[in-house]
Length: 181
Image 1 (cartoon, rainbow, N blue to C red):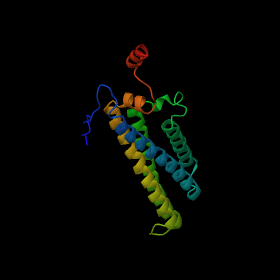
Image 2: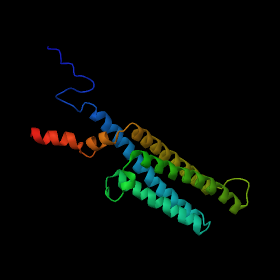
Image 3: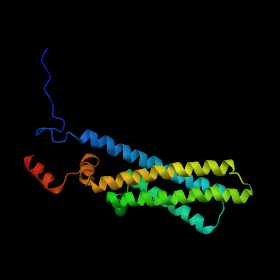
Image 4: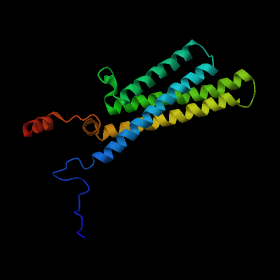
């Protein structure tokens, strides 16, 4: 039985994308968590709209959070990429995710307090507590995705993302490959 050839961990000259599988898993996982968290964000906004009737300003804020969550979903699924240019930069996308998460955390506090005041009880009602926990969990997931995007942006992983997920190559490398073919 012949020993198998050792393959380098970081790829070789004949196979330049040795880490692509690792990056693919990371990018797809972050995108999946972001889509699920954004869907939960929309559900959380719908839930709090159904439970609470605090006023038109709070309702508008919830509608805006829903719009941003829909934009996040479209950006993660690479739909309308040309129209959502504000979400192309990873650092800005991360800040937007964390900003929406902070709004959701504040809303979870409001749901808790509002249900207590409306029921005139010292304890938290079940629907208010459940809604608050759901909004907190959603906010935590969105905040985590935001932090990951800020880190990925700080590490300049956008080009890697474009190459691995979108199949784009930087212009210089694309021109070299066209000359080879």
